[in-house]
Image 1 (cartoon, rainbow, N blue to C red):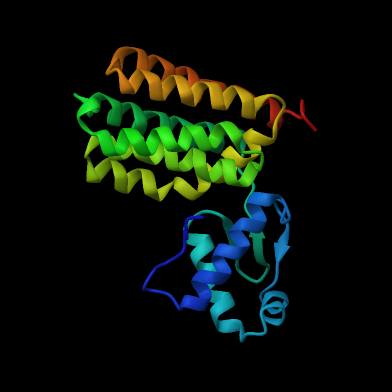
Image 2: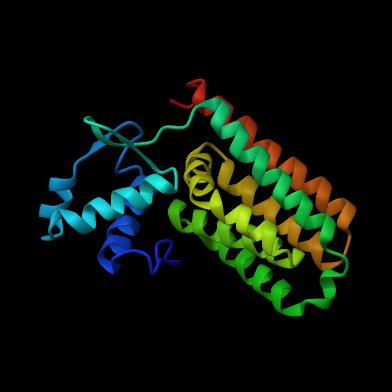
Amino acid sequence: MRDYFKSDQYNPLANSIAQQLFEQILLGELKPNEKIVETTYAEKFNLSRSPVREAFYLLGTEGIIDRIPRKGAYVREYSEVEIQDLLDVRNQMEYMAAEKIENPGSNEKLLEKMKTITEQMAVCEDIIEYTHLNFAFHSILIEFSGSTIIRDVYDKISLRLMRIQAIHFELSESLAKSISEHQALYEALKVGDMELFKQLLRTHTGGVIINLRKYKSGVYI
């Protein structure tokens, strides 16, 4: 599993704590708007409050928690508008990446990586692991573009995207649909049919938006 917090700017303990808290949020063990307390986690990890405070700061900069002066830290809940905006940005970044791909068949290494991920997706039964595989798949699409600028912008919202994707994959029939769509995306890219690939990409992202709107409106809860 990828280590999403491995910055040299922070104490290694802070990176580790941030990773564990992020996993708890993805798993739903920490709910949106739930308060998280420094002393609780300092005691849990048998550490001083300093690395825990750094971990909270790191999660705050990634948009995963809100740190409110004199009130504390809370797991961030995204509004429907924020979810729409995040997915719109992702869609634009991926579409821009797709526009830059001229001959995907020439990059056998990336195609093989994408094929392996689609095979792992097909047999994955764990929502959180599937969320990681989904992120890896879409990261390869960005890598195909060869653009460091698109990669940098994409990385800035990657953890927030993972949060809303984890919710999406828990919803009825989302996982099976996602597996089928990712397979179709891979097949289109493999044969170099970029027009079909871009069409599938738009449909794929649109489905996520529709599903999460239903979630926010209470259809699934």
